[in-house]
Amino acid sequence: MYTLNANDLHNSFSLKEAKMRWTNLRKQVYEMIKSNHKPMCANEISSNILNYDLSNIYRTIKVLGEEGLINSLTVSGSNFYFVGAGHFLCCKKCKVLFNFDKCVGHNIVDSLEKEFDFVINNHVLLFEGYCKNCR
Ligand SMILES: [Zn+2]
Ligand SMILES: [Zn+2]
Image 1 (tube, protein in one colour):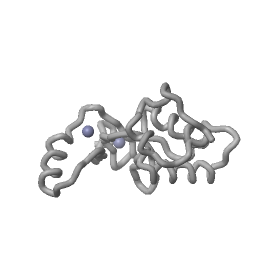
Image 2: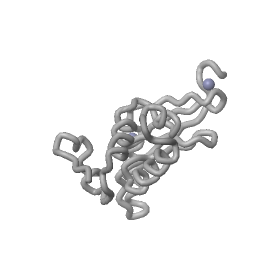
Image 3: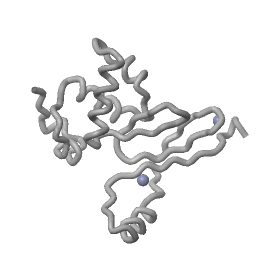
């Protein structure tokens, strides 16, 4: 069984919450998605990991998703995976995906928590439109 040491706990909240076993592959996939600056699709993840085929990667992604460790975003039928809150702009024509760090969600989060008596611990914002080249 793979055990995490304290140095691995960048994201200690979600790792502690996770009840699954940290196999080597799960850790590799998680760390890769987490450290990538853009959301990744399964093919990209798979092409960076040796000795495992795409079906292993899909199974791993599914487990990580069920544990709430990674989030996904669907852009024209393809799934992209990322860790943490996501803020995206997606061009409807060329499908380019930009992430931005500036969080515009806090006011919405506050009012939704009050309105629905709900504790929100993550969010994904996707804005669609047309990029500079596609207008
Ligand atoms: Zn575009
Ligand atoms: Zn945000």
